[in-house]
Amino acid sequence: MARGQARTELGIPLTSGAAAHKAAVIQYLAARGIPVTRDTIAKFAAPLSPLEAAYYKRLAPQIEAARSTTQPDAESVDPTTAKFYAGRGTNSGGQSPAPHPDRGKIIAQIDALKKRHESLLKASGAKVVEDTTIEGMAYDPERNEIIFNPDDIAATAQIIAERVYNPDSWMDHAFQEEAWHAADATACGAQFFAIHERLSHLLEAAGPSLRPFYTGKTPKEYWSSEYIRMLWQLRETGTFTELRSGRLEPEEEDHMKRMLRQPQLPEIEQHIARIERFIASKKGSH
Image (cartoon, rainbow, N blue to C red):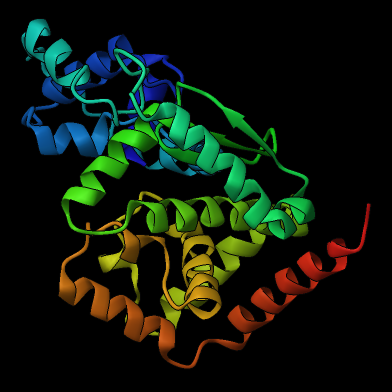
């Protein structure tokens, strides 16, 4: 994961969205001859989510072993430009310049979603916590918390509405997504990473994968966690988070749906069944 490597080398927190830290990553990119464009900044300068950070920490020894020893040249980028790009937008992983006018509405929606997806939350015991340093919504496996940023969610909801998609439906599925990850991680316990590493390898070996069309940032060693989540959401609701945002091209949507509607590996089915049994077992507990 290039984003994690850059932040590790720079000595800055993996999950920090502070403008100064993003500017430092941009300087790092420029020093390696990577063009400083909006696309590369969006791809490499964004902070890691808590779950991505946990993935990266497990992969770091392998990444370090494979790293090139080539030293970068001294080329740099105008710090004014770097700060300009790093501070752009409210959905950038950093604290918004000012509270979004719809933040109160978003907080009320989160409260409603906690009740709507109560069975998932009860299974994991995850707390839902507001944190202005994390973009949108994210699950933190180390703290067993679903973190949400009402200002970033409100800004994203506006963009989704402009795409003529339903922002409320997107928000519902995004919350359900993180609640599923929490249940998955809790059910698997200490074996969560090992289980998904094995399942990811099985999916890769099975034939054409979903990976080229998946727009998330989960490393391939663990992307089964997203594949299984999308599969479960599709079966549960008829759709999944990525289809509610309007970010995908029609051919990407079609490919993803075909992949998820085909017969799945027995190991994938067994894992979903395991998590569903775990969720059901917690419904009657106190």
